[in-house]
Each structure stands twice: as C-alpha cells, then as structure tokens.
Length: 223
Length: 316
Image 1 (cartoon, rainbow over the protein chains, first blue to last red):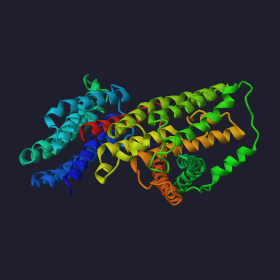
Image 2: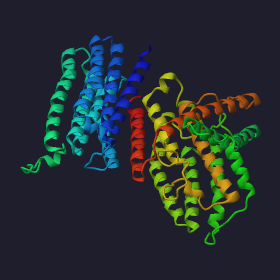
Image 3: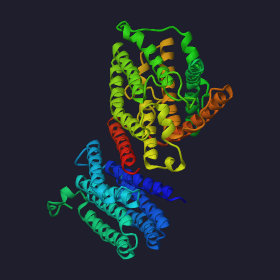
Image 4: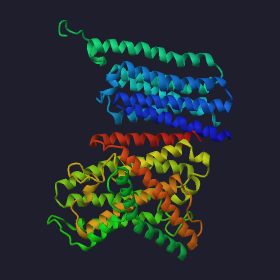
C-alpha cells in the first residue's frame, strides 16, 4: 500500500474520532454514550493498526489488539453488567450547558488544539501531525464534557473518553515503547471495575448517582 | 456556442422531467422497505397531471404574492440547474453566470417567497410552518457556506464545474477525511432542506407538526402542482450537486455528442438511484426529531462540516 493512502486512512480515522467526540458531547442517553465510547475505541485501534502497518511496529499491533479487547468488549460488558438499570433507562441526562452551545465551544476548543499542535507536528504529512491535534482536542473536549455532566456514570464515561484522547496522541508519539501503553490499556479495565462497584454501592444505598445531590446527608429512618 | 446552449437546455429538461420520477422512486423504495404496499414510482406524474386539470381555490386575504410565489419557486431550481454540472463535465453556456454561492442565493430567494406566501393566505398554520422552515434554513445556511468554501479552498474556485475537476481525483482523495465528512454533512443538509425524515416527516400532513409541507398548505390546483414539482426538482438538484460535484464526479459526458449525453443520462440516473436507496435506508432507520432537537441535529452537522474544513486545511 502506498504511504499516502496509509496517511489518508489514518487521517480518516482521526476525523471520525473527532466526530465521535462531538457526538459524545451531544449525547444525552447513557447507552448512546457508551456505544460512542466503543466506537471511539475501535477508531483508536484502527489508527494504531494503520501505523503498525506503516512502521512495522509489533508494539503498536499489540496495542491495537489490547485496545479492541479492553475498550470494545471488556469495559462495556462490565459496565452493562454491573449498572444495567442506568443503561436500560431511556431517561435523558441533565446537562449544565445546552447542546448547541457546547458544540460551538467544542469547535473552538478543537481549533485551539490544532493551533497549539501545528508547530509541534511539523509541516510534512506525518502521523504525528494528524494524531497530536486530534488527540489533544479529544482530551480537551472530554474535560469539558466531564464538567457539564451532572451524574456520576456519564462523568465516568467522559473520563474514559479523555483516556482515549491521550492514547490517540500517544500512539503517534511513542511508537516503540510498549510498557506504558500496555499497562495503561489494562489500567482502564481495573479502574472500571472499581468505579462500577462503587457506583453500584452508592446507587443501592442512595438511589441516585446525581453528583449534585450527593452532598447532603440522607435523613435517617426515611428508608 | 449553440451546442453548449442546447446541452444546457437539455440538462434543464432532464431535471424537469425526471424529478417527479426520482421522488416517486424514493417514496416507492421507502414504502417497500417499510413493508407497505407501495404506490407506483410514476405516482407523482399522475398527481401532477390531476392537479393541473383541477381548478383552484384562493383565500380572499391573498395578495399578488400568493399568486406569484408558485412561479418563483418553480423557476428557482431550473435556474440553479443552468449553473451546475448535471450531465456534462465541461462548462456549459451559463456555467460562469453564477457560482455555488450564487446558486445558494437563488435557492434562498425561492424559500423567501414561499415563506411570504404561507403568511399571505391568513391561515394560522401557514406562518407557523413558515417560521419553522425559516428556522431550519437559517441553521442550514452556515453549513452550506462552510461546505462550499472548503471545496473552493481546495479547488481555488467557487464555480461548480471547476470544483468538480479538482475535488475528487484519486482513490486516496475519495477516502480523505475532509471528503468523507463533507459528504456526510451534505447528506444531512439535503435531508434537512427537503423536509426529509429526522427533521420533518415527508409523509405527514398534520398541521401542528408540519415543517416543509406548510409551504403548499394553502395552494390548490395548478399552483399546488407547480409548488410540488418545484419541491421534487429541488431535491433532485441538491442530489445532483452532491453526486456530480462533491462525491462521485464520474460518468459525466466529456463531449457534446448525442451518444455521450445519452450514456451520461443513464449513468446519472443510476447514481441517483443508488443515492435514493441510501436516503430511503437512512429515513427508514430514523425517527422524527422533536422541533427543539432539530437545532442539535444541525449543530452536529455544523460540527461535522467544520471538522471537514479543519481537516482540509491542516491535514493536506
């Protein structure tokens, strides 16, 4: 395959990655957010696969495989299993800022990310020039999504999206150091286990994971 | 010179005559996919023929605008057809008379007059639908501008014939992110501008919910036929811009010989058929959005178009 086509495919994965981030910001239902997270994990692994092929890197190939297993299979399965009621309810989550405003802010944020990353990526068409700004934009938009969501589970999903953004930039920068990438891909699973158990405990006791309402104490005897 | 003009007129004739068929095939596909007993693809022709023979009823409140608007909305898509590459890849007689932004302005003129006419008849549902149509158009406008300027940025021109030569030339360019995202954004614009499903229900005639249908609410007889026909042509013209300029600029006639033109008509019809299948599948798999969610749908479209623009500027 010619290298220009590989660059094109990587750029396509990057653009779809950015679109998924925007859609995540606009999504209100938890199940939709989770499926977007899965899609984003697949795009991350697609980008890693293309680069593994282009650079003949076994580390990146391993990373792509682990990403698919962890982010498209294990984490969604665990979250769905332990928090089934939250995913089955079609209730729409509260957002602190309206969706169109959020989208405009996200566009501004991604332009900022491109402006910051352009001097670092260089002028030649390369994988870094594509992945760095998109990963940075994914990171910043996820932080924004985290701050406008009011319930614990969507917030946690934003945190996982943030993780994706970091890795998306990371795969292009560190193409030959397997240790931290492998470790971090598995780390997300462990964090998910702990958080899922915690959510379950909280929602069983209090009946909600709305973060704003967890600040007060529940009156004794009202159970 | 004369051939160029003749081919241009042939182009208009093709759009004029095939537009109802395109709409009919689209409805037929949708109804078949949904498991209904579908009306014949030729149904729009029967409808137009029937309406042409009927008399018209006009509100006593209506002014000259109400009489005038159907002609404007009928002429608008024809004028746009003169500017775009519908059958040929070489520029025709009117090719340089207006660019893509000009075509957008012409379509905007048609929208303006239909909105005025809807208000003119003093039916309370008319202004309601007209204001909704205006809301959708208002949100679609910036997306159109971004799409057009992104392709013009690459082609260094806003003339559709020139853009069509530069925009998609190789397989790598076809899968370029800017191209894929612009195509996605443009499909969403086509759905929104023609009152198709996630934005408006083309099969629904409930006054309280209608958006695009409100423009022919008060019309009857030949005027209704003109407004409907104009709607069919608008859908076809936007689809042609999408297919022949933005996504698949192949299969067009390179010379003005009758054989090349005939094969171009067949190939373009084939492309339109494939696109109709795509629209039918999209529409069948989506539910109508609530009115206040339309701004979110179009906000997502806007984000897609902006990402496409950023990708075109930074990634290439």
